Image (cartoon, rainbow, N blue to C red; front, side, top):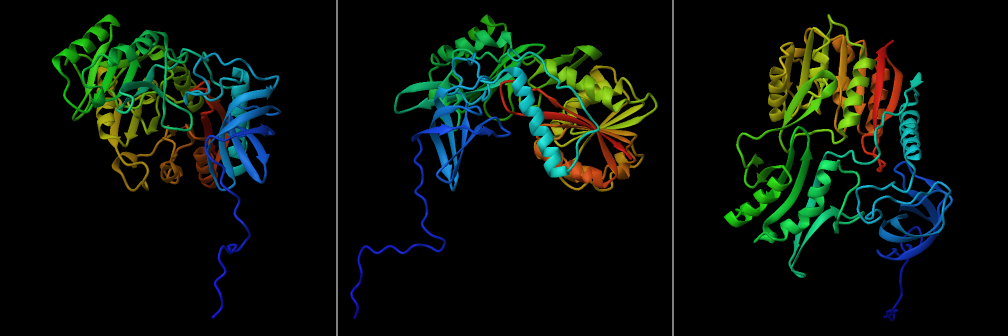
Length: 450
């Protein structure tokens, strides 16, 4: 019998596997270019590094956040040789907080990055470019965010309450003393919130907090156990001091402490007021939202005698301004509660030429009564997954013009392929800078039937 050879290692087919890079390791890197999401790209020892906070041409020290296969994700810890484009980051928490990833880029360079991302997706995936590029639609680069979710977690080991935003690349919570992208009315609430929450008797029962600024200011607290009268008094005193509504989210849906209180926002250009409740989708950038609605209507060019379809209508953000200009608007949304609120918003604004329907727009659009008459024009504003099943049927509705508002250039490009197959031409496209200081890209595209 042959002896067993101890310590022998058999190599798997294809050669040896490179050792995994541990999280937390620091590495000096030369950044060659920027990825579409604004991260720097470096190459070392057969691996591709994606480095948050780095710019092309820089020498940086990066800390590993995670590695899988040949891809390493990291964040910049130190800059040895800075790019001429680099600017000081205005926020004291930049680089640790996961909210704003491109503060080190001047705003005009942020816009250029987003424009390149949109153009690259349309060219690579759909093989098209628009006949005309629209100028970026943007507003102030700070003080724009009217809604924010704040993470709250009880650290049982340290016996302390953590309050802030999620850290970049982890579930850690970064304590935030101020946030320059929040609208001004929310700034003092944000700065005083941690101290107030730490006074509550059951910190381990607290969930997240949401802040809202619209026609009213509101603070919503998610809690997993009933609140004591003493805790309610602390919360009410805090909200009274800040002239804010108090909303509580225990079991069931969020509810205002005072039953008659309501939230909403205005579309000033159309003298419209839209009511909403916590949990409803609302664009966080009021200024860019209003400019976006105006541009969508300009591009769609609706006529007074037309019937227009608004898909993924939400609370009526586009449908209600459209209804002021056309014969009829048919608006469709997947969330039944938002359909009901959109109909209420139309009625409260004295718009009676609108119809609202609930439908799962991620599924194939079958024979539906509201589509039988057809439409001259269509506006759609889908979630990140896009609207593939819907766009497959748009030509059959007779629409000559389509305005597609997208929060994901990849799915816009995918859906563009289908629209081109149906005979539509991409006439115009441009970015919407809804989230300055981030690499998140929103876009608008105009298609016309050939």
